[in-house]
Image 1 (tube, one colour):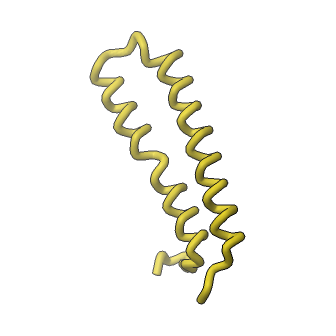
Image 2 (cartoon, rainbow, N blue to C red):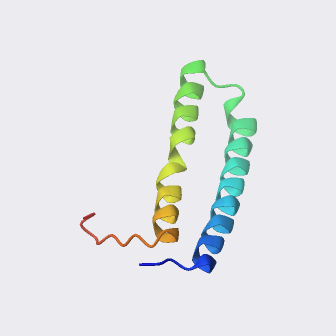
Image 3 (spheres, rainbow, N blue to C red):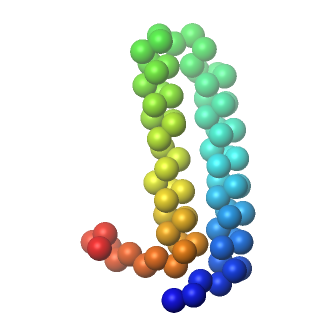
Length: 74
């Protein structure tokens, strides 16, 4: 199954927009709430924030490449 170039272009632009908004949101949270937190809380936040972008990006990459997955994950 050949995936159209427009789908890949839309997906790429969507991924860039998503990552830009996500990074700005993480920076905003860091600048406002994380500056006076305990180092353990900061570490947990950065680990979660560093991994939280992966599932939406993975879904978008699957969509871009035309991979169809059913609700059972098969």
